[in-house]
Length: 332
Ligand SMILES: CC(C)(COP(=O)(O)OP(=O)(O)OC[C@H]1O[C@@H](n2cnc3c(N)ncnc32)[C@H](O)[C@@H]1OP(=O)(O)O)[C@@H](O)C(=O)NCCC(=O)NCCS
Image 1 (cartoon, rainbow, N blue to C red):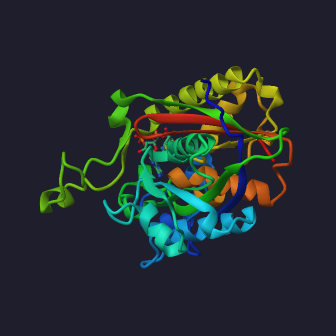
Image 2: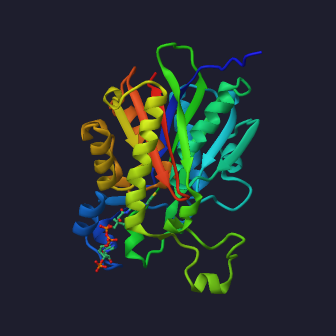
Image 3: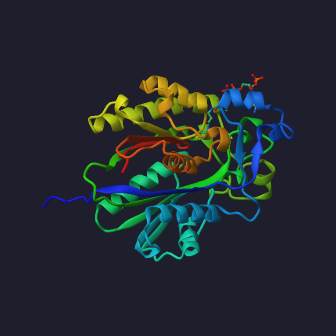
Protein backbone atom coordinates (compact mmCIF):
# COMPACT_ATOMS: atom_id res chain seq x y z
CA UNK A 1 0.00 0.00 0.00
CA UNK A 2 1.49 3.40 -0.95
CA UNK A 3 1.29 6.25 1.53
CA UNK A 4 -0.61 9.34 0.29
CA UNK A 5 0.91 12.62 1.47
CA UNK A 6 -1.27 15.66 2.05
CA UNK A 7 0.00 18.77 0.17
CA UNK A 8 0.88 21.58 2.57
CA UNK A 9 1.78 25.25 2.58
CA UNK A 10 2.56 28.22 4.83
CA UNK A 11 -0.82 29.86 5.40
CA UNK A 12 0.28 32.75 7.61
CA UNK A 13 3.31 34.52 9.08
CA UNK A 14 3.86 36.77 12.08
CA UNK A 15 6.69 38.27 14.10
CA UNK A 16 7.43 40.25 17.20
CA UNK A 17 10.44 42.34 18.21
CA UNK A 18 10.92 43.93 21.64
CA UNK A 19 10.68 47.73 21.68
CA UNK A 20 14.07 48.38 23.26
CA UNK A 21 16.70 49.15 20.58
CA UNK A 22 20.38 48.72 21.46
CA UNK A 23 22.58 50.57 18.96
CA UNK A 24 26.21 49.90 18.13
CA UNK A 25 27.08 53.29 19.59
CA UNK A 26 25.52 52.30 22.93
CA UNK A 27 27.46 49.01 22.92
CA UNK A 28 30.67 50.95 22.35
CA UNK A 29 30.07 52.63 25.72
CA UNK A 30 30.42 49.30 27.57
CA UNK A 31 32.93 47.28 25.46
CA UNK A 32 35.93 48.26 23.34
CA UNK A 33 34.24 48.42 19.93
CA UNK A 34 32.77 50.94 17.50
CA UNK A 35 29.81 51.33 15.18
CA UNK A 36 32.27 51.34 12.27
CA UNK A 37 33.91 48.01 13.29
CA UNK A 38 30.60 46.26 13.91
CA UNK A 39 28.93 47.54 10.74
CA UNK A 40 31.81 46.81 8.38
CA UNK A 41 32.44 43.31 9.79
CA UNK A 42 28.80 42.25 10.20
CA UNK A 43 26.31 44.66 8.58
CA UNK A 44 24.58 45.10 11.96
CA UNK A 45 23.57 48.58 13.17
CA UNK A 46 21.29 47.75 16.08
CA UNK A 47 19.46 44.89 17.78
CA UNK A 48 16.35 44.51 19.98
CA UNK A 49 16.62 43.58 23.64
CA UNK A 50 13.74 42.12 25.68
CA UNK A 51 12.68 43.98 28.80
CA UNK A 52 13.09 42.30 32.21
CA UNK A 53 9.71 40.60 32.36
CA UNK A 54 9.54 39.77 28.65
CA UNK A 55 10.16 36.04 28.24
CA UNK A 56 10.85 33.91 25.19
CA UNK A 57 7.34 32.45 25.57
CA UNK A 58 5.79 35.97 25.57
CA UNK A 59 7.54 36.93 22.33
CA UNK A 60 6.75 33.52 20.83
CA UNK A 61 3.07 33.81 21.77
CA UNK A 62 2.77 37.28 20.24
CA UNK A 63 4.45 36.21 16.97
CA UNK A 64 2.22 33.12 16.97
CA UNK A 65 -0.91 35.20 17.54
CA UNK A 66 0.00 37.45 14.60
CA UNK A 67 0.63 34.48 12.30
CA UNK A 68 -2.75 32.96 13.19
CA UNK A 69 -4.37 36.28 12.38
CA UNK A 70 -2.81 36.44 8.91
CA UNK A 71 -3.60 32.77 8.28
CA UNK A 72 -7.22 33.42 9.27
CA UNK A 73 -7.17 30.19 11.25
CA UNK A 74 -9.13 29.81 14.47
CA UNK A 75 -7.24 28.75 17.59
CA UNK A 76 -9.30 25.58 17.81
CA UNK A 77 -7.95 24.44 14.45
CA UNK A 78 -4.30 24.36 15.60
CA UNK A 79 -3.33 20.92 16.84
CA UNK A 80 0.46 21.12 16.92
CA UNK A 81 2.85 23.74 18.35
CA UNK A 82 6.60 23.56 17.87
CA UNK A 83 8.91 26.22 19.29
CA UNK A 84 12.49 26.32 18.06
CA UNK A 85 14.61 27.99 20.71
CA UNK A 86 18.00 27.93 22.40
CA UNK A 87 16.75 30.19 25.18
CA UNK A 88 13.64 28.54 26.63
CA UNK A 89 11.97 30.18 29.64
CA UNK A 90 13.17 27.17 31.69
CA UNK A 91 14.58 23.68 30.98
CA UNK A 92 11.10 22.22 31.36
CA UNK A 93 8.25 22.41 30.70
CA UNK A 94 8.89 23.35 27.11
CA UNK A 95 8.33 26.88 25.87
CA UNK A 96 5.79 25.38 23.44
CA UNK A 97 3.64 24.28 26.41
CA UNK A 98 3.82 27.81 27.84
CA UNK A 99 2.87 29.27 24.46
CA UNK A 100 -0.02 26.84 24.09
CA UNK A 101 -1.39 28.08 27.41
CA UNK A 102 -0.73 31.78 26.69
CA UNK A 103 -2.58 31.52 23.36
CA UNK A 104 -5.39 29.37 24.76
CA UNK A 105 -4.82 26.61 22.19
CA UNK A 106 -6.19 23.08 22.44
CA UNK A 107 -3.05 21.54 21.02
CA UNK A 108 -2.79 17.83 20.63
CA UNK A 109 0.97 18.21 20.77
CA UNK A 110 3.40 20.91 21.88
CA UNK A 111 7.16 20.60 22.14
CA UNK A 112 10.43 22.51 21.75
CA UNK A 113 13.09 21.77 19.22
CA UNK A 114 16.72 22.72 19.66
CA UNK A 115 18.97 23.06 16.63
CA UNK A 116 20.50 26.44 17.54
CA UNK A 117 20.24 28.97 14.68
CA UNK A 118 18.97 26.28 12.29
CA UNK A 119 16.13 25.50 14.70
CA UNK A 120 13.36 27.11 12.68
CA UNK A 121 14.22 25.17 9.51
CA UNK A 122 14.37 21.94 11.54
CA UNK A 123 11.02 22.77 13.19
CA UNK A 124 9.44 23.60 9.85
CA UNK A 125 10.50 20.25 8.39
CA UNK A 126 9.24 18.42 11.49
CA UNK A 127 5.86 20.16 11.38
CA UNK A 128 5.66 19.72 7.61
CA UNK A 129 6.12 15.97 7.99
CA UNK A 130 3.47 15.76 10.71
CA UNK A 131 0.88 17.77 8.76
CA UNK A 132 1.71 15.99 5.49
CA UNK A 133 1.05 12.67 7.17
CA UNK A 134 -2.57 13.74 7.58
CA UNK A 135 -2.50 13.28 11.35
CA UNK A 136 -2.48 17.04 12.11
CA UNK A 137 -4.51 19.78 10.42
CA UNK A 138 -2.57 22.96 11.22
CA UNK A 139 0.74 23.52 12.97
CA UNK A 140 2.07 26.66 14.60
CA UNK A 141 5.84 26.78 14.10
CA UNK A 142 7.70 29.45 16.04
CA UNK A 143 11.33 30.52 16.32
CA UNK A 144 11.85 32.62 19.46
CA UNK A 145 14.91 33.74 21.36
CA UNK A 146 15.93 35.87 24.27
CA UNK A 147 19.64 35.64 23.46
CA UNK A 148 20.41 38.70 25.60
CA UNK A 149 20.33 36.32 28.60
CA UNK A 150 23.10 34.06 27.22
CA UNK A 151 25.28 36.71 25.60
CA UNK A 152 28.42 37.63 27.52
CA UNK A 153 28.13 41.42 27.59
CA UNK A 154 31.84 41.63 28.47
CA UNK A 155 32.92 39.71 25.34
CA UNK A 156 33.11 42.14 22.41
CA UNK A 157 33.66 39.33 19.89
CA UNK A 158 30.16 37.92 20.48
CA UNK A 159 27.97 40.52 22.22
CA UNK A 160 27.81 42.73 19.14
CA UNK A 161 26.19 39.98 17.06
CA UNK A 162 23.02 38.88 18.79
CA UNK A 163 19.50 40.14 19.58
CA UNK A 164 16.05 39.08 20.79
CA UNK A 165 12.76 38.44 18.96
CA UNK A 166 10.32 35.89 17.59
CA UNK A 167 8.80 34.84 14.30
CA UNK A 168 6.10 32.32 13.44
CA UNK A 169 4.34 30.56 10.60
CA UNK A 170 1.23 28.43 10.32
CA UNK A 171 1.57 25.23 8.29
CA UNK A 172 -1.70 24.05 6.77
CA UNK A 173 -3.07 21.71 4.17
CA UNK A 174 -2.79 23.21 0.70
CA UNK A 175 -5.62 23.43 -1.78
CA UNK A 176 -3.71 25.22 -4.56
CA UNK A 177 -1.84 22.80 -6.87
CA UNK A 178 0.35 25.64 -8.25
CA UNK A 179 1.95 26.60 -4.92
CA UNK A 180 3.03 25.16 -1.59
CA UNK A 181 5.77 23.51 0.38
CA UNK A 182 8.35 21.60 -1.65
CA UNK A 183 10.64 20.22 1.05
CA UNK A 184 13.79 20.66 3.12
CA UNK A 185 17.31 19.31 3.47
CA UNK A 186 18.82 19.23 6.94
CA UNK A 187 22.35 18.48 8.08
CA UNK A 188 24.61 18.32 11.10
CA UNK A 189 28.28 17.89 12.02
CA UNK A 190 28.47 17.07 15.72
CA UNK A 191 32.27 17.06 15.68
CA UNK A 192 32.26 20.87 15.50
CA UNK A 193 30.70 21.57 18.91
CA UNK A 194 33.58 23.79 20.04
CA UNK A 195 33.05 26.29 17.22
CA UNK A 196 29.88 27.63 18.76
CA UNK A 197 28.38 26.49 22.05
CA UNK A 198 27.18 27.34 25.52
CA UNK A 199 29.05 24.99 27.85
CA UNK A 200 27.26 25.50 31.18
CA UNK A 201 23.84 24.61 32.51
CA UNK A 202 23.56 21.05 31.22
CA UNK A 203 24.69 17.82 32.90
CA UNK A 204 28.30 18.30 31.75
CA UNK A 205 28.74 21.58 33.64
CA UNK A 206 25.74 22.01 35.94
CA UNK A 207 25.15 25.47 37.36
CA UNK A 208 27.39 26.15 40.35
CA UNK A 209 29.15 29.16 41.81
CA UNK A 210 32.28 28.03 39.91
CA UNK A 211 30.44 27.77 36.58
CA UNK A 212 29.06 31.27 37.07
CA UNK A 213 32.47 32.61 38.10
CA UNK A 214 34.03 31.01 34.98
CA UNK A 215 31.33 32.55 32.74
CA UNK A 216 30.32 29.09 31.47
CA UNK A 217 26.70 30.14 30.97
CA UNK A 218 27.44 32.37 28.01
CA UNK A 219 27.93 31.79 24.26
CA UNK A 220 31.47 30.79 23.25
CA UNK A 221 32.42 31.14 19.61
CA UNK A 222 35.36 30.81 17.23
CA UNK A 223 34.18 33.52 14.86
CA UNK A 224 36.46 33.02 11.87
CA UNK A 225 35.95 29.26 11.76
CA UNK A 226 32.20 29.65 12.10
CA UNK A 227 32.26 32.12 9.23
CA UNK A 228 34.01 29.68 6.88
CA UNK A 229 31.87 26.71 7.92
CA UNK A 230 28.69 28.77 7.53
CA UNK A 231 29.39 29.68 3.93
CA UNK A 232 30.35 26.10 3.05
CA UNK A 233 27.34 24.34 4.61
CA UNK A 234 24.77 26.90 3.48
CA UNK A 235 25.97 26.69 -0.11
CA UNK A 236 25.98 22.90 -0.01
CA UNK A 237 22.52 22.65 1.54
CA UNK A 238 20.95 25.24 -0.82
CA UNK A 239 22.35 23.43 -3.88
CA UNK A 240 21.17 20.05 -2.54
CA UNK A 241 17.57 21.14 -2.09
CA UNK A 242 17.45 22.87 -5.48
CA UNK A 243 18.92 19.86 -7.23
CA UNK A 244 16.56 17.49 -5.43
CA UNK A 245 13.60 19.38 -6.91
CA UNK A 246 15.14 19.76 -10.37
CA UNK A 247 15.48 23.53 -9.89
CA UNK A 248 18.37 25.93 -10.40
CA UNK A 249 19.55 28.95 -8.43
CA UNK A 250 18.39 31.41 -11.10
CA UNK A 251 14.78 30.25 -10.57
CA UNK A 252 14.80 31.42 -6.93
CA UNK A 253 12.79 34.63 -6.55
CA UNK A 254 13.68 35.37 -2.93
CA UNK A 255 16.25 33.95 -0.53
CA UNK A 256 15.55 34.36 3.17
CA UNK A 257 18.88 33.52 4.79
CA UNK A 258 19.77 33.23 8.45
CA UNK A 259 20.62 36.83 9.35
CA UNK A 260 24.01 36.29 11.02
CA UNK A 261 26.46 38.40 9.06
CA UNK A 262 26.15 40.39 5.83
CA UNK A 263 29.58 39.23 4.64
CA UNK A 264 28.53 35.57 5.05
CA UNK A 265 25.40 36.27 3.01
CA UNK A 266 27.35 38.15 0.31
CA UNK A 267 29.83 35.29 -0.02
CA UNK A 268 26.97 32.78 -0.22
CA UNK A 269 25.22 34.89 -2.88
CA UNK A 270 28.31 35.00 -5.04
CA UNK A 271 28.93 31.25 -4.69
CA UNK A 272 25.32 30.43 -5.59
CA UNK A 273 25.31 32.99 -8.41
CA UNK A 274 22.16 34.62 -7.01
CA UNK A 275 22.23 38.44 -7.08
CA UNK A 276 22.12 40.17 -3.67
CA UNK A 277 18.88 41.95 -4.55
CA UNK A 278 17.13 38.57 -4.33
CA UNK A 279 18.21 38.17 -0.69
CA UNK A 280 15.91 39.59 1.97
CA UNK A 281 17.95 41.30 4.67
CA UNK A 282 16.99 42.84 8.00
CA UNK A 283 20.07 42.03 10.08
CA UNK A 284 21.03 45.71 10.20
CA UNK A 285 18.03 46.21 12.53
CA UNK A 286 17.94 42.95 14.48
CA UNK A 287 21.37 41.31 14.41
CA UNK A 288 21.38 37.54 14.76
CA UNK A 289 18.24 36.33 16.55
CA UNK A 290 19.14 32.65 16.09
CA UNK A 291 16.04 30.48 15.59
CA UNK A 292 13.91 33.62 15.26
CA UNK A 293 15.95 35.14 12.46
CA UNK A 294 14.42 33.42 9.42
CA UNK A 295 10.77 33.62 10.52
CA UNK A 296 11.11 37.33 11.42
CA UNK A 297 12.70 38.02 8.02
CA UNK A 298 10.11 35.88 6.22
CA UNK A 299 7.26 37.76 7.89
CA UNK A 300 8.77 41.14 6.99
CA UNK A 301 9.43 40.01 3.42
CA UNK A 302 5.81 38.88 3.02
CA UNK A 303 4.27 41.94 4.69
CA UNK A 304 6.41 44.38 2.69
CA UNK A 305 5.38 42.71 -0.57
CA UNK A 306 8.94 41.56 -1.26
CA UNK A 307 7.73 37.95 -1.60
CA UNK A 308 5.06 37.60 -4.24
CA UNK A 309 2.57 34.85 -4.91
CA UNK A 310 4.00 32.10 -7.13
CA UNK A 311 7.60 33.04 -6.31
CA UNK A 312 10.11 30.35 -5.35
CA UNK A 313 11.39 31.11 -1.83
CA UNK A 314 14.56 29.52 -0.46
CA UNK A 315 15.24 29.64 3.28
CA UNK A 316 18.74 28.68 4.37
CA UNK A 317 20.26 28.49 7.85
CA UNK A 318 23.30 27.35 9.84
CA UNK A 319 24.08 27.32 13.52
CA UNK A 320 25.72 25.70 16.52
CA UNK A 321 26.06 21.96 16.31
CA UNK A 322 27.05 22.57 13.63
CA UNK A 323 23.60 22.33 12.13
CA UNK A 324 22.28 23.57 8.82
CA UNK A 325 19.24 23.34 6.63
CA UNK A 326 17.40 24.68 3.60
CA UNK A 327 13.78 24.65 2.64
CA UNK A 328 11.89 25.57 -0.50
CA UNK A 329 8.36 26.82 -0.95
CA UNK A 330 6.44 28.08 -3.96
CA UNK A 331 4.77 31.03 -2.22
CA UNK A 332 0.97 30.76 -2.08
C1 LIG B 1 32.75 37.52 14.63
C2 LIG B 1 33.25 38.16 13.34
C3 LIG B 1 32.38 39.35 13.00
C4 LIG B 1 34.68 38.64 13.55
O1 LIG B 1 35.15 39.22 12.36
P1 LIG B 1 36.61 38.83 11.84
O2 LIG B 1 36.86 39.66 10.66
O3 LIG B 1 36.63 37.33 11.67
O4 LIG B 1 37.49 39.31 13.03
P2 LIG B 1 38.49 38.49 13.94
O5 LIG B 1 37.75 37.55 14.84
O6 LIG B 1 39.53 37.89 13.06
O7 LIG B 1 39.11 39.64 14.79
C5 LIG B 1 39.86 40.67 14.20
C6 LIG B 1 40.25 41.64 15.29
O8 LIG B 1 39.09 42.37 15.72
C7 LIG B 1 38.99 42.29 17.14
N1 LIG B 1 37.59 42.33 17.50
C8 LIG B 1 36.74 41.29 17.71
N2 LIG B 1 35.52 41.75 18.02
C9 LIG B 1 35.60 43.10 17.99
C10 LIG B 1 34.67 44.14 18.21
N3 LIG B 1 33.39 43.89 18.51
N4 LIG B 1 35.08 45.40 18.07
C11 LIG B 1 36.35 45.69 17.75
N5 LIG B 1 37.29 44.76 17.54
C12 LIG B 1 36.90 43.47 17.65
C13 LIG B 1 39.67 40.99 17.52
O9 LIG B 1 40.08 41.05 18.85
C14 LIG B 1 40.82 40.96 16.54
O10 LIG B 1 41.82 41.78 17.03
P3 LIG B 1 43.38 41.37 16.84
O11 LIG B 1 43.59 41.33 15.34
O12 LIG B 1 44.08 42.47 17.53
O13 LIG B 1 43.49 40.03 17.49
C15 LIG B 1 33.22 37.14 12.16
O14 LIG B 1 34.24 36.18 12.32
C16 LIG B 1 31.90 36.42 12.08
O15 LIG B 1 30.87 37.03 11.86
N6 LIG B 1 31.91 35.09 12.19
C17 LIG B 1 30.68 34.33 12.16
C18 LIG B 1 29.98 34.44 13.47
C19 LIG B 1 28.55 34.02 13.43
O16 LIG B 1 27.86 34.25 12.47
N7 LIG B 1 28.08 33.42 14.51
C20 LIG B 1 26.74 33.01 14.66
C21 LIG B 1 26.51 31.75 13.92
S1 LIG B 1 24.85 31.24 13.97
